[in-house]
Image 1 (cartoon, one colour):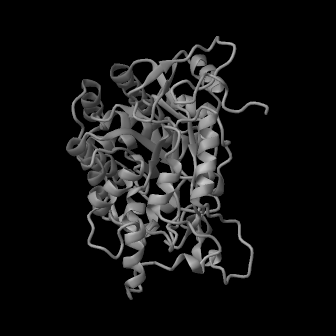
Image 2 (spheres, rainbow, N blue to C red):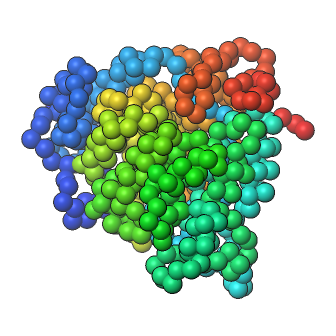
Image 3 (cartoon, one colour):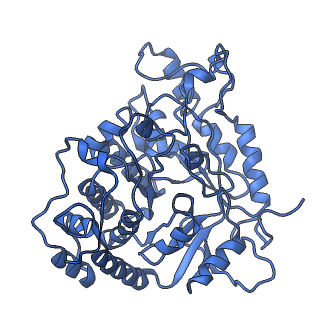
Length: 453
């Protein structure tokens, strides 16, 4: 064993009395041999690779490099040398939420949004008309995907029929208040999706958590909810709100959210009605390596059942300015070594998901590029707005141009490729072109997204 061991700095993770611990009877060498051979890995294999199988605290750096090498080789075998990106916009409808997740500083307590509230606040709610204007402007600039993930505003209903049901109910557990009690009406999920479904833009929205909110108080299935949203213009579903798909972790960081089984049920329902999905993991808070691998295992099983997951998106927890940090439950996020291993083991474990994303919003440019040598092959999108990470203390920017993508990807010897949301449309980008902008959208003609106007 190498002496080059990097100590763990996130001590609070060990303070929780979790049932699942990163302890196995497998050996690191056996797990790595299986990974290199392309065999399907077990949970024990994944834990050994994530921890580098050390018998003391920390990561063995020499072993880590061997895991990264195996993952990069697998990436080349599966997707080749292309690095993809998408021309997209984030249009989050509202920050109003009272779910109380301890990892989140994106939301604002919904009480602040009520018309009777006297104090100012920094949150926002957009009407459908405002959402439509934002998306139309982006489409004119060549953007062809809008991602929308929002707080669970108490006035949000799926549609007019759902609102009637909520208005008639006397249940106090439904987290519902009429729109008239708020300074601004978010309307319904269907109206917001219809507003964003303009000019051929692909609408990527309605997480499992939002779908749960959109059926509360009814006996409707998730399939029914997603069919109504699909009819309104929903094109695919983001697999966020997953956090860690192990309930003993969810009970600590987001006890007010749906549990693992509910999340999986919603994702299967989206696939059942014909919607593509993505999947995420948010790691580096209170969980340990066993939880991370159990999460990967549940995503792999979901993909075995649905074949609808187009990409897996690891999201490194940004701890600053979150309740977890304020309460002293975490001192840091994941280390760089942990970030690299999570990307690599995701590539090796998820043998049925082709695309692994590196988030420059979470990792920054230099480390984001490094992740493309650890098993990742997608580099996110242009993202004209990114409120979530920014509110949690992230500082890596809110926009990436096609020119920047081409230059950065070419600089590491890889091929820049513009893609559609579902990866079915792709075009190689020439870094030597005089001007570079998106070309896959209905109104994309190669003009840079942001120009002097």
